[in-house]
Length: 210
Picture 1: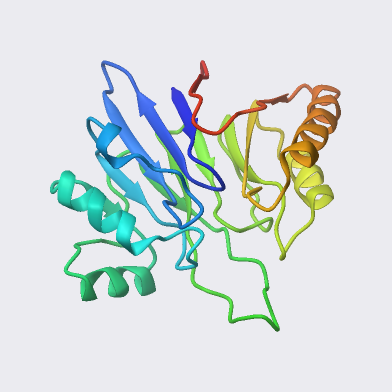
Picture 2: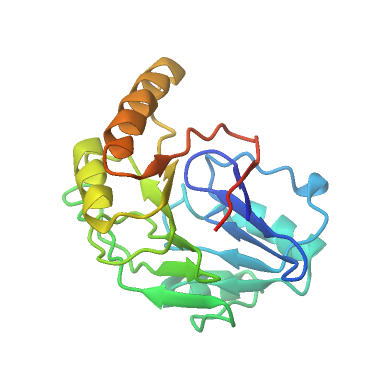
């Protein structure tokens, strides 16, 4: 499985032959997506409606380039996409399973949106903006920083769930220097628990054997 972080919570996940399948998770306004460079795309997953996870213009460009792409999203996002003449569904395609991952409270800033967590190909779990989930596959895309949650909460949750690998997401707000220091600390903390923390860099693909 090849994973490329395209900033914040956006992950491009590519599976080689014989699976030969590619998905893009949470293309938001903080994401750095070069649509022209993508050669194929089977699925887009939008976990919830917030703009850092859903950039409508980016989705329009992706659907225009890949007219057969499947789009999975919660019902309120499906409705928004329909208004833009984009077909989407709340029903996961083969190879994806939804799991309970409610968005953390963001009161009093704004209402809590509907959200989905997605297990992909029984290998990777993406929970959106949640620390309130109880299951993960071998690779966990872990939100490590947010107005709604703390890095310590993220670390303790991952230690409890014990994935084999962690890919940190939702850290656009960190300066590079802060990110490097906190990544190093998390790498050491997770190593003590037998968990591999992947210090992924934006735009640089990594290959994970699972």
